[in-house]
Image (cartoon, rainbow, N blue to C red):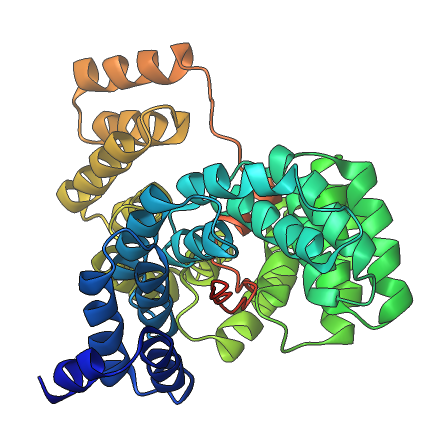
Length: 383
């Protein structure tokens, strides 16, 4: 109330300067009070709402910032910096679709060589990336990377976008750019390995992942990627070593545990597999492979009722996976349940396997850290 009273005693220009000064000093509570007083005194002026939005955004209160920015937009959608700030708040809140709608008109108006165009290219690219619309993200990310060719983080994001939209030449071109900047880039080798695997060049993919391990054995997922490729090729013992190495780096890596347990089964290390799988089905119960493999272990231990339960769960979680029905059929037959065995064999025989277990799908299910542009809000121009 003291601030409001003193505000009323100031001239209009002094009121603006006082509110701006409080904002610049980071005195958010006092600044908010000052801007709210101005919004009440000048209800048709958009700037107090725009500055209130900026205050909220700087405190990472993005929903509140959006509310104020939208209020300002209804009063004057042409206010300098306002549209960009609204888009930034939506972007940082994760409302990528709405952010794109705000940024698109700006993309069409700013000069292509300006810093603002570079900023918008990153924001548009990352928004589409956040929506998993990788084909739409790639041109914007390429534009941004062309303007900032030494930015490895940006190149890495571009390469992932190219890979996830199956633009393999783009992956190759970006890979060479990354290697030119850092010849020992484990991330670049991993990306090239994923691309080669998608192109059915398993030997090339394995070679690239070996190079990645050599470049940086502590790189997240590097041992897992190599271990998975070796697992697909039946090189179980070496696969298990790599999966163990991934778990040494990251003891909570669920995918590494899943494939290590399966490798243990293939090596007839049933006790090791059971200990891992019983842990996994408790902490990650929606993975069908875990239940299927645990059923295999229980069946081997002659725990038939428990094995059947696990096979049934696996079939429920992955109804197109023929292995679950085939395992159930064999188990029913060993229990003397001929009719049930025949029913499951028939399902297995008639079922077309639709699951795609390629490396790209497996790797893309593992969270990757992504750098997001740390764009500060642009203060609206004061008149």
